[in-house]
Every structure is written in structure tokens, then in C-alpha cells.
Image (cartoon, rainbow, N blue to C red; front, side, top):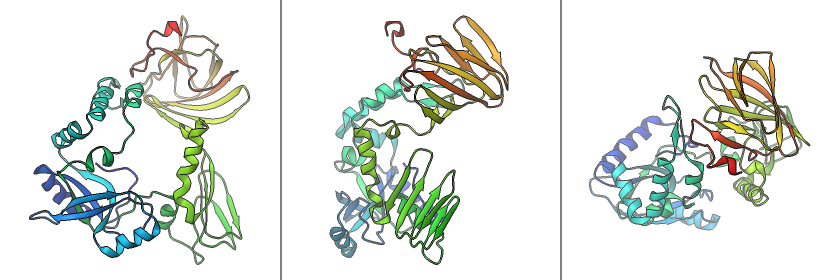
Length: 370
């Protein structure tokens, strides 16, 4: 089990560790890859090593430690008895299911419920996990739920180079720096700047006379922070969640089972989206209480259902979906369907949708009652 945001440049060393982990997992162990610390890092969790495992480089897991302050991190590094918790594991399916059953049966039950309620597309290549069932699962890390309680957990200390890219400072450290320690991705101009990282997806950024800064410009938001405070970005997310801000839940580009949509512009009573529908995919039969929609096909061909009508809309053509109209969008072709959607209404939230039928299992129960 490998989180997606790690960087391991030495593949041969990782493969060697993975083979040893697989051998231990085959004997019934839950193997955690522990990374030999190279600095008193306060952004990682630590594991204190226990007794050696016979005929292996692995050690028992004496205790798990949350992200420490700088003083404790330095003490852990000096002792030589601690490794970073990489969050990477190797185990057999039966082993982890048994451990969940023993230590977190409610999590296992919720996972089974979510899987049973999930739906696959026609080709079986995409599975949409049922959102309602998944949301009912207890919010707990695998460390808390299982690893800190199970006797079969062992730690395999690993010396390969590793970064979890867990902060924008970590991103900057992977890039070549100029003579003043500056790094950049995208179009940037740095004048009399030092030790600063600038990153932009779409537009030019100029930084003048600054030091030790992170400037990250994305379609979702702009971040300006001290490099020394890079781990505090999560506090921004916490405040957005407390305000129920949409930015804490959705990106400008949102993945859906059928494709993607990107919010290009929005203001009072209007929102403009770019919609891409994969070949052969179909959106739900749905209705909106508060908005109408204008669809302009840029490329590909759309099959549109609107109330009792069913018709094709080709590139450079458009159609209109009135408030309350039951409608469905399909891509019957073999190339992606690209559209511009203009929404107009007094409420444009993503929750203004009633689904009557859906091939991905997202239809609302008894929609007529809503």
C-alpha cells in the first residue's frame, strides 16, 4: 500500500526492500517501511524500533509517535532508535482483514458496506465508491485503527532516499536552485529575491525583494507563506472547512465517473464551466430547481435528452435546458465531448441536483418526494 505523493528516486533499493517486505508479509506480518531519518524533521511521524525479527533486518514496532517538536525530533535522530513513518505497508489481504476485524470491526463493516453499494461503469474500468456509505465510515488513520494495536506489525528500516512531498517546501527542495537559492515552476521573474519558491499554473508571477517565501498560484487559490511555516498550510484548510467554503471540498477541475468539469468563471446568478465527457459515457438523468443551463458543443457530438425530446448537438451548435427540465447528456462518439456550459439562476451550488437514474448508482431514493 503506497500513498500517491511520495518520491523515491532509487528504485533498485526500494525494490530490494519491497522483496524483503513481501517475504515477511507472506509469513503473516504487517510490514511498515520505516525511513532512516536524515534530519530532525517535525513534519513526519516516528516509530520507535523494538526487538530484532529473526533472520531479517526488520524490527518490532515499540511505539508510534506523532509529529514531534524540534527538540524531541533532534533527540530521536541522535538516539538511532527511531525511523520516520512512511505510511507505506506490505501485507496479505487475509492478514489485514483479520487485523481490522480484531481491532477496528466498525471500519471493516463500513468499508464492506461502501464496496457493496458502489457501482462500476459499463466496461468495469471505473468504480464509483458510494459517497453516502463511505461518509459513514469512522474517520481514523490506519495507524490508530490497526497498527498501534496489532502484534504482527514489524518495521523494515530502509535507507533509500525518500520524500513524502508533504509540503510546498519539500516540492521546492526537489528543484534546481539558482545562485540565490530560488526555485520556480511556471513563468516567474525573481528580482533581488532569496531562498524563494514561486509556482504558477497559468500566469506570470514576479517576486521582488523577498526572502524565504513560498508563492503558489493555482486555479483554486493563491498561497503566500514563509518556508518556515510550510507545515501550517493545513490550518488554512481547517478554517475553510469551518466556514463550509467550497474550496475545501472541490477543485476548479472536478473528476466525475463520466469525465471532468472545470469552473471557468462565476459571479452573481451565473457560472461558466468547461465540461469533458469521455467516449461512451453518460451523465445521470437529472433536474435542477434553481438554474437553467445553456450548452455549447466545442468538439465531439452530444446526445441530449430534455423532457420528452432526444436529439444530437454537433460542434458549433448549442441547446438550452430550462429550470426544472429533466435532462441527460451523453457522448455517443469515440472522441471526447467538450462543451461550454453557462448556468443562470438564483442558486448555483453543486447540490442543486435531483438524479432520477444513473449508470454509476448515484440516483436519489424517491426523487419525486424532493
